[in-house]
Length: 435
Image (cartoon, rainbow, N blue to C red; front, side, top):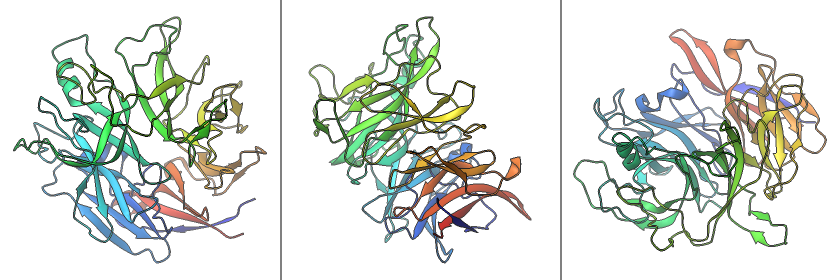
């Protein structure tokens, strides 16, 4: 069983918020974070920094120009698994009181560690009709690299549909999941800083509808996804699916009540090809369409569905298990797992207290770390053995957000609030394995 030493890494009078995944550099020496002191503060947050695990040296990677409480705003930074590059949410550059940071007004920006302050716009944005294939018309969020570092997943809200929804009650701005792949996309300059070029080709990979039919597999929201496996998963017929996403989708049960279930989107090798009559970039009255070859299917059918605090799905490295939160027979939020091929879910934790937040898998796939009972716990997936690896904190000081493993699995970083003479601030703590 794992043993850890705990050490506080940051102390400054500002927030130090880590993303829900991939916050360690590829060599495990640096942790990237934004300077939010609360999840809701991306729009008013202007800096991305990283801290050295051994020395606690802090380096600023990016600072937004003309930052105000309305934006542009930055947050949710994540390290590439193959490059010394970080990727984060960046609000639209012309943000002001009349056009503040928002779900449809953000994009993904990267910074190479060797060139701090020099933004690389990843997903192109084009809200001017006619739209540009490979560009999106809204805001990307919660970016996550595939294990090979080549593709990037994200959640997405469409600005064009949001504006249309303001005049047409039958239209909604529905959250979707998208993927970007390498490939430059050039967009006409609109002189308003609303549009931008991108170094990746971006598409939506989930199908949503305004009014899902009760009892069907239709969804009106796709969100909080993960990549399946380091190299995909094996289908029931033995074929390899090398790129796939698991995501949460809101369905309606037979009575019309909303239930969150788990879906899989199998992705083709080429995401740049559309279906005839369904443009990838969308139209003035329709959302961006899903590329040809994407196969979406539901894998859980349950009474309560996915439940508990907000969390992102996770997959074991071999792609055999998708992990999520749900309620056990006693009404306690536990970790469960299911094959990407569907079947019977398996309960993974059996604690007398609920899991309190998002979780992450050890790189070996054997352990999962999560907050519970005002502490951090690890559970061995095969045996179900659980262990508290921090002390039990007071309610105000307990771990916040998702603990993140280093690439070699010897360190685990987490957030919690600490008192400072200027207030209470989210700080970084690292647990380092000693056995």
